[in-house]
Length: 68
Image (tube, rainbow, N blue to C red; front, side, top):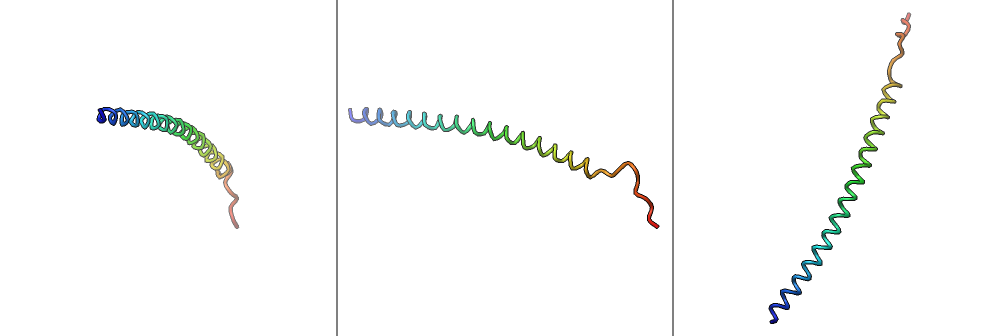
């Protein structure tokens, strides 16, 4: 009967480990989703900054005066 007890103990350990790993994986998935959202926000901000810099760097509609 010792073998049965050993198997039951191992099964209990494996079930506990599985629950722990499942919780860790769920937590990591939530963190990944938050990080992806932050990346999206940062990409949008970077794009907006690029547009602002492009509008500042665009030359005026008039050409520069000729140099004498």
